[in-house]
Image (cartoon, rainbow, N blue to C red; front, side):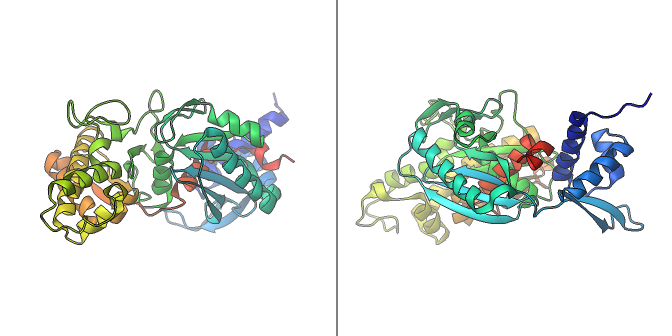
Length: 402
């Protein structure tokens, strides 16, 4: 019996093909059939339609198996665009990318008011501006990287202590304002996803991203896919307990890694130690209010050889190195990618963390584990969030709806 596909079946086939091309890049029709489970006849019909709609193109490439060049299929990158956004304590970074994730436009919007209504309004206004600029080339969906503990399945911010937010139905509010589906994830996971696919982690299958700025969080990637955990909490590396009954952390626990290795921890330690060493020269002392001392200055001073700054940075980095050693022993990644402004501003911090990791972990596991600095700075979170939106939402209907 011959079964004629319904329009819904055809849309499902096209969606499956588009999602595979997004995930795997250039692949043959034969490989598409293997990955999607669709028949070759269905693949042939659907691909022809996608080419006609200028969503897919053919090219001849020599594959790893050798032999004659094969006809492969790719997303036609310039026909559609996707938006990703990343929120940090000071600003939104919002980017427009093509389907090969080249940057088309980027905007950084400072935040003055941290109320949820104000923060959402800034995002929506900038997205609407991009809609005016790029029109129907924009896919009607958005990925958003946010600080804090995120339930991405339900579109909920569980808690974001820097903003004083808890139990915020963020995705629903964005959908209400824009009329677009929205997905959210922790912004360090978004930054890690960008590094995994396009940046310092692109050559690894199993890696861990750790972002060290005012706080610490991360993303775990297995076979290049984000590990989310049973309740979307995998990667809360900043809240590993390092010291029982230690310093109080913003999460309410005591002794968390974040309380010892983050930028905020560096500032607290610097202010404390400067007050205790007023008779000894250090570049960290000045006539300015010590409450204005920022961790970036501590990092830069340490790399220039300031004795007190070095002491502070090395102590903080040792705690991170111990946490990394534990992760080596438990997860055994190929590499760590260190992002955020602390690793970016201090080679000493990175070198000390690496040395400590190798000393504290099983040597047979850590001797080949690499530690790299993240490549993306300002727009990495927006790029990763746009990728996450494509992973979760990309479909044929979204590409052709009027």
